[in-house]
Length: 81
Image 1 (cartoon, rainbow, N blue to C red):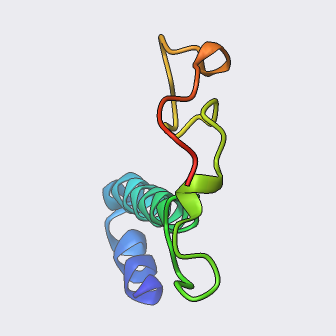
Image 2: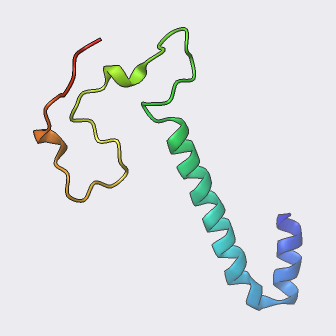
């Protein structure tokens, strides 16, 4: 695939920025998918830890970017299981 892109880039230099953005977008999507798969609310081993989200503190920031929420001042709602 990269060899074909290289050959087309040599013949048509206007395609080089498009190939760069394509590779950048694919790598960004792959890294975000890896981040989602490694999150604290994902269970890969159900026998060892079936509910990993119960071990997180109420001040844990789940979102990638929290604009207006201060997670330090949140109080835990609900019982411990």
